[in-house]
Image 1 (cartoon, helix red, strand yellow):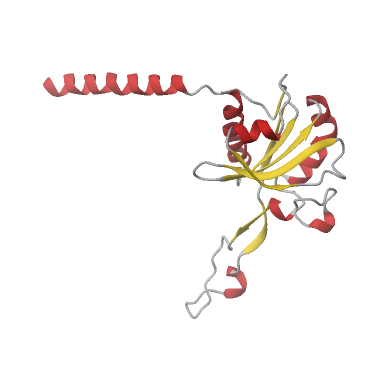
Image 2 (cartoon, rainbow, N blue to C red):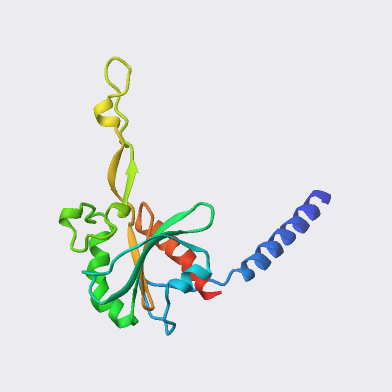
Length: 188
């Protein structure tokens, strides 16, 4: 009986801790395309810990007013490519096709094939051969185990207000989660 009482007390205490800690985290609900009345800029990102690695020239990125590659200063550091437009409608109208081209399974990660050439190299990720073949002699098959740096870094993107955010992730769900992280910081 004493064990049951202790279990109940610890359960209540644990539930209280979880409930209190979840109240501290106010998450903004996002969809792939989420309108916002706020006009964001590079300064908005910088204020929440975004560290710029590169500024991209936006020539050829129709109606964009800025584009940056960088990371959110957290552990782990996640890469982002963020593009700014004058309005939410401009981001949708002029930026969607460029974002579609650089994200997902069929992303264009070769500069000579890309519509907008800036940052193509940054949109790649390196990974070894996932199949890890071994030759008959018991050693790795070097030809198949060489690291390949033509993997897509951004599985998906989010249009949030006047920003298009390409967020690193191996699959769409991971990219969305990483976009959500920076959006929550912007909304605090």
